Image (cartoon, rainbow, N blue to C red; front, side):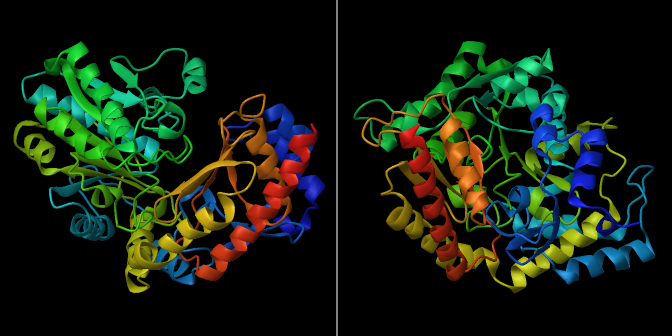
Length: 459
């Protein structure tokens, strides 16, 4: 029996009875019932009642080539028929992860030539944490194991991912984090810059927080700094141009490894294959997932720099780490086809030279002047809209975080799927968006803002 044999109410009842959703108030969800998304095509998703929504979040930051791409289904089918699964243990491999690793090494920064696979970004951040600490132990410095991260960072929901991340609510529910991980200020100028402080000076000050943490612990005790090039789930917080060059200088000065989390920004989102290339960063590890397969299969890839890989190979012996589905042949086949499509359709170049700049203009020229909007910001096809009560003072509506939810609900009701994070509305659409799609998004966002302002001002 397929889902078409069930009514929406029946599906909602079954969902409530048996399905625990991620990041959800389960009591609230059971009261209102889930929206059932049943099909998708191109930049649009459709629910069980036939409602069309322009997907402004690429699923969950991942569906870069859009929905309904038969090429990926065919790649998965062909691989399933030939070899549906075999593991990468026991000195074995299958062809697709081998070929994918070669392709990723070609696309990545020049100092990165090795890949370790998982099924999610969180798994690969776990791998990165273990690998970095193992590296320093192999180099005879086991005490060099502290990781510096940032407040409001998001690195996944596993125990290690939550510990690496900087979200207080997640920490409170964890009941005990992985030790020796500390968090410093985030590069969020809109709220944290001092009166009269330039973006340049703020970027240097935010980077200095990392240096201060290194000095406080002692450089001989600090293994690495981990950061998202652009903080995604924390609200698309884009650092000033001065931030990443200074972070890299600091890491090199104190011999601290640089770990990038590009689970969201990888594979074209910023107008380059990796945000490392956008910002001129030479990292020691890059965590990737999501858009690696455009979400059509679960797959993550930790890209490992030559410095770490060389030590692991030459001094490491057996690395006691891995997953059942590391290098899953079907997922890797889909990834190879996905990367081929991104290349053939020139999506990275389109984001850099056309749709990314057009998206930025749409936000600045059509959205920034709205009475609820304190700031808009974007890089490539990734943006945020700050929702405020007073544009001049940056005062928020009370309680904090409530206003963006009102905007989000109006957006969805008017055919625009967006996400609210705190008081920020965030966007990360499929890379197949065109200027016409961006104009459509602008129309629907403006309508949602107008309706939300009506509700919020009279409240």
